[in-house]
Length: 175
Image (tube, rainbow, N blue to C red; front, side, top):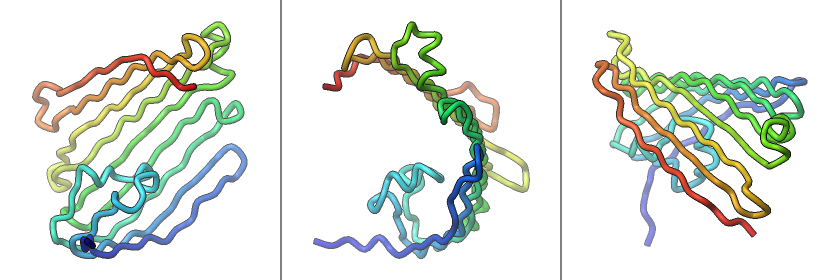
């Protein structure tokens, strides 16, 4: 059984110059194209297409991004800008990722990681209305193979109504 999810392509460059890594891409997606069935890892670098299902319209656009990688990539600051012609969707984001030996100084030598991304997606570019999205996570090793995990996600609506958020926590075992 084969499902037709349309066609799409992207062409661009990704690289690193010293502590700066970069990404630049042009995208073309035909009608009914759904990217997520092909490679979720690829889509981690752009709009979460699982939340933007195919609606029968073709679109094109670009994705630009840069990261500043410090302390052997233990401390990373990033920015991205994405534009799609369909509906004029624009998304800007900033991210922070901290881990490795930098965090071990504060956790008594235990493995830990912190990450946070804040994004704005313009709903109506003519009016400047934009929803905000915060995605933050923390993880620390309790002892070998056992981690304490915490996640916080929030949506800040453009109309300034109350934010919608979820928090999760738990323990994971990785042996």
